[in-house]
Length: 413
Image (cartoon, rainbow, N blue to C red; front, side, top):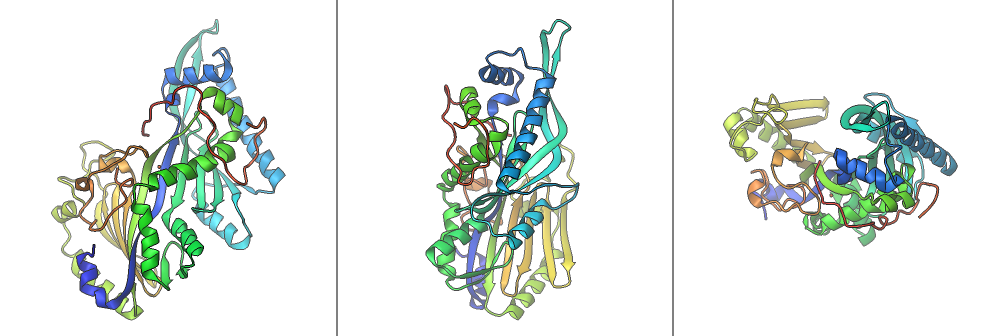
């Protein structure tokens, strides 16, 4: 389906494609996020809850850290402790540019972040009185992985029970790997294809990420690595099977872009400058509500108070780059040029809670009514709603361990 913009400037284009960009999935074991459920899981793991106290929980976190560093040293994988404000993904990209990586975990970055942890209160006689969940700054381990289908992906996991994690993927990496496999030649600049030998063929590959089958692909790539390359440092495969620890996934963040490829770069710059000049002066709150398909302004942190994140902004981070942004709470629209011939329009959902639809990866089926007005194509349905005795870093990945007992009910975080 051709939108009005492409229809108007179609004679200046030699191709276009729509593609999913950044995807962030929350990974969680639902049972462990309620006091009774966590106590039940602990009993499955240890047989009883006599050792359920703060000391043993801290020991599990310490064991996770020691195993990560020991296994990384044995396999020659660097472990870097990051400071606050460092761009971890940029560190990984620089490492990839200077090192030969085949497959598997190639870098581990350690940094502190907020995560849910459990605090146990016992009486003087040792009776368990209370099990309280709190949020604290703890070490998180970002496992940077090179997957044969999805390229560079990251699994960021807390070292403390219940070992919550985030899986970060990129749709352009998936399309690039598929293009190499099918022989479609391209030039890629960062997170964008700037030159294409066969735009129609690449657009067809990118469209596969907008199909419901992508839900299965996302689940497969997560299960391929999260158990044998990450969780194994906190729970070995035997402990995972005995306690029935399996992850569920929900969509937390998503980005979707429409990329227009101009034949002549000077014409692209002229079109973009005119669009920005004519558009920014006409934008007000009612028009922004219409663009984002909302009846009212977004609330602040889920409250009725009006959010301050409502603006039309023009940024020039470099002399040759202009960013046109529309902020609407946890939703953002961007327009900017990439390279000499690519003009990109990008939609970002910073927290899928703002979409007010299902987020659990295997059940999210949004209706077209919940999609904002910027979408005139076919947005991905899932984005608007993803035994060894000693742990070692897996170089190949493997499926999840078998479940013991009935599966837990899915939930979103």
